[in-house]
Structure formats: structure tokens, C-alpha cells
Image (cartoon, rainbow, N blue to C red; front, side, top):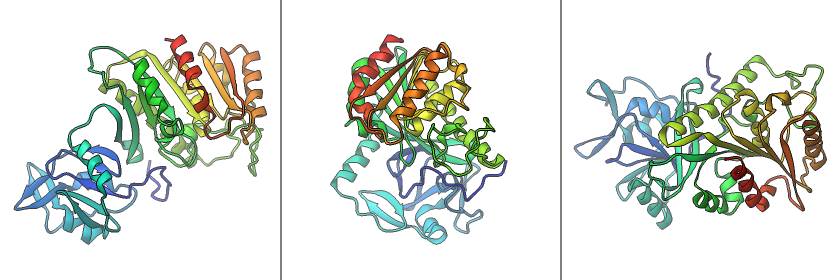
Length: 368
């Protein structure tokens, strides 16, 4: 399938930082493990053309056959400063030996330099920011991890996957809770994986909307596609869904993860995905906790979730509709699903779950 270059990705990098002596680089704050380590010749830093094509895939065209290219062990390298200046019009700021590329010069303050130093020391615990290459979308997609400081790979860990809301990013659940999410993860032994939506408003592959959505042309006489999405739009949403499964599988290989203790939480658009993905990919999660949204049950095949423990969270002041979410609970409960409803008094759409973190982790711990 041809990739639509006009497609709007959820994350578009603004800065690209290169360590001349490291086999990885940074896209903003996300670490990208280079396929080929940089080469330094006579003070000039060279990067592999293949890596640059991945970094700027979807945002710029990286040309082949550059006049200044060299070949090492069959791989083409280009002088990164002059190459990006000539071809992508990017400026390079040198900060303590690191090369930072952006459209405009980057003023690195003390905090940025300390943060980049921490990366340079190969930090592998606490908050980690990464990207992975997803070939079907021909794109680097970000994810964020929390790895307990005592993790040493000697025992299986619980994995909590997090899906963010529309217009947000992988920081959402961490920042909305004032970083208390990491406190629970450290204490209870969870690796947390926050997954990017890949495409803006992808709904993680769900083709439905919540009950009460006021969208022109919404047609529930066609339950499998009430939005009347094009085949192309559906295909891209499904690729976003596949990217979620891909990164979960990847992290489950990189770290010692207990396959019987994987959990899923998401708010708003992420709540929709938290209903949808387990229905389409049974057996991945031990329990799920959607918040702030539920698919319109007129079109959702909720029977697929029978036997899966569900905690549905909603704030009483949710402007998207506490009553609609409670109605989804009523329908699924009456249908025999193993679902609980947790109302948050005074809670709002964006972050009501931050008030019930204890209850959220208690639910997951009950289902270990």
C-alpha cells in the first residue's frame, strides 16, 4: 500500500540531536537507536543516509547520491551538518560537542544540557523516551516507558500499557497524575508503556464514536462503519492499531514481561482504544480500564470482551457525557460482561482518573 504523504501523523519531530560518539540520536526527547553508528573523519561527523531517511520520513525528502557521500562497509554516509543544511535547510547548533539540528538555532539551557548528559550516560531506568520504526507506516513512532529502578531482568514484570487522548501524546498519563503514576509503578513492580496514537485522531483503529457524538453524516444503519470512512482512512486506522500491538510485542521481548499480567488503560480517545484493541486482539491483556469514553454500543461488538475484567472510569462533570458512559456500563453489565463502574465525583473529561490511581492499581492487583 502506498503511504499518503499528506497524512497527519500524531508526532512530528522538531529537533534532531546527534552524539558524534554514540550509536543513538534524539528526536526531540525520544531516543532513536541508529542503524549505523556515526563516523568522524578529520573532525567531520558522518551519518548513514538510511538513518536520515528514517528520521525525516514523512516530513522531508532525503536525496540519494550526494556528492560528498562516502561508503564504509557497503553503507553510504554523508557529512551531516552540510548535508542537512543544503538539502533540508536545517541549522546546526553545537552544544558541548553535540549537534542539534532544527529549522532555527536552538539555545540549549542548563537543563537541556543536563538532560542530554543523562542520555549520554545510557540511562536505562525511570522515565525513558524512545521511538520505533514501523515499516507499514514508514515512520518512526514514539513511546514512553517507566522502568522501576530495581529492574534487573531476573524476574517477570507486570506491564501497564497506556493510550493517550486525542490531540495529546505519550506524556499524558504521567503528567496528568503529577508523576504519581510512576510512584505506583515503582512500588508495585510495573513497567509502564505509553503508546503514541501514530496518526492524529486514529482512535487506535476503532471506527466508532462515543454515544452522543454530534458528527454530520453519522449513520448507524451501517454499524461496521457509521462514519462512512473511506477504505483508505480505514486502512490507515488499522495500521495505527497494528502499531500498538507491534510495540507491545517489542517491549515484551526487550524486557522480562509476564504475558499473563499485561494491562491496558486509556482516557478519552485512549478509552475508546482500550475497549477496541482487546476486542480485536483477545488474550493480550489480563484486565483493562477505559476512562472518559466508551464506544457507542449500537455498533460495538462488546460480546468479544466477555470474561475480561473491566473497570470503567468516568468523571461526573465529563462534558463528553457522564450519562453516556454510564449507559455503556449498563448495557455491557446487563449483557454479562465482567465490568465495574467507578464514578469520580467532580471529575472532568481530561484527567478524572488521576483522583483514583489507588483504585486503578488495586483493580489491576486483584487481577494478577
